[in-house]
Length: 329
Ligand SMILES: Cc1cc2nc3c(=O)[nH]c(=O)nc-3n(C[C@H](O)[C@H](O)[C@H](O)COP(=O)(O)OP(=O)(O)OC[C@H]3O[C@@H](n4cnc5c(N)ncnc54)[C@H](O)[C@@H]3O)c2cc1C
Image 1: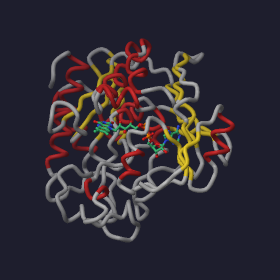
Image 2 (image 1 turned 180 degrees about the vertical axis):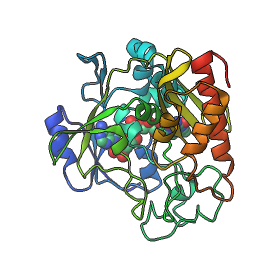
Image 3 (image 1 turned 90 degrees about the vertical axis):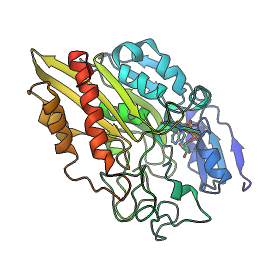
Image 4 (image 1 turned 90 degrees about the horizontal axis):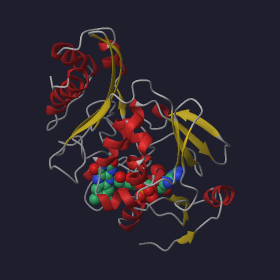
C-alpha cells in the first residue's frame, strides 16, 4: 500500500476543507476503498474519515426520511420507519454483503462503492478502461457472465454492484451534496453515470464533493414494496439480477408502480418503460412479462450473459405477482 495521511475532522466544515485538498478521498466504513488501496486501484494521498460525522435518521415534515451519509447500513435496515414504510430498502440492504460488512459500511460509501468487474480488479493481467482510460475492455470479449446488458458502451460493460442503490432508485431518493461547488441536491437517478467513452467516471460528483445525506420522499404505497436478489450463492454474493418494486393497486388494475433493476447496468436501473407499460393495466403474468420485454428491448447481451433479460423478466414477474396477489406469477 502506498503511504497516505489519515485525518479525522470534527465537523462538516472541517471535513469539506480537508476533502477539497488535491488527492484526498473520504473514508466511510472503509470496506471498499481500503481494498482498492491494497490493490493499488485507488491511491489517495489522504483519507478524510467522515464516518464519525453525525449519523442521524430523521423524519421529514411530509412523512419522508432524511438519512445522514454516515449512518451504517445495519442501522438503516433496522430502523422502524424504514422497515414499515420502505421495506424494499431494508430488504435490499440485508441482501448485501455480510452482517460484519453491513455493520461497518456507511450509506455514503455504499452509494459510491466501485464495480466488482473482475477485469477492473485484475490490474496486472487485464485491460480495463474504467481503471486505466484508453486501455481497452477485456470483459467485452472475455468471460462476461456477470456483466451488464443495458446502458453499456463499447468502452465498458461493468455493472454497478450495490443492492441498496437499487431500492434508492425505485424510491426516487434525493442526494444532498456539499463541497467546493456549494450545497446542492440532485435526484438519485442523476448521480451515477453511464460509461459512454468515459467509464472511469462513475458519478457526476466533482472532486471534494461530500454526500451529506440521502432523503427518501414520502411514498404512499411504500409499505407495499419488496426486493428480490438472484445470485450464484444464497448469501455473500453480488446480484446476477435484482428487482426493487413497489405497487399500488386500483381495484383489479395497477394504479401505480415503481421498479428498478440491479445487476443489469452500469448504474442502478430505474425501469421507467416497464412502469409505464404496467400503470393502469392488469396485474397478470403476461402483463409483467410484456413490461420486462419492453424494458429490455434494447438490451445488448454478450457471449455469456444472454440469460439476463430472461432472468430479469422472471424475477420481475415473481416480485410483482407477490406484491399484487400474494403469489409469484
Ligand atoms: C466481501 C464483500 C461482499 C460484498 N457484497 C455486497 C453485496 O452483496 N451487495 C452490496 O451492495 N455490496 C456488497 N459489498 C460492498 C459493500 O456494500 C461496500 O463495500 C460498502 O457499502 C461500502 O461502504 P463503506 O462505508 O465501507 O465505503 P468506503 O469503502 O469507506 O468508501 C467507498 C467510496 O465512497 C467514498 N465515500 C465514502 N463516504 C462518502 C461520502 N459521505 N461522500 C462522498 N464520498 C464518500 C469513498 O471515498 C470511496 O470512494 C461487499 C463488500 C465486500 C468486501
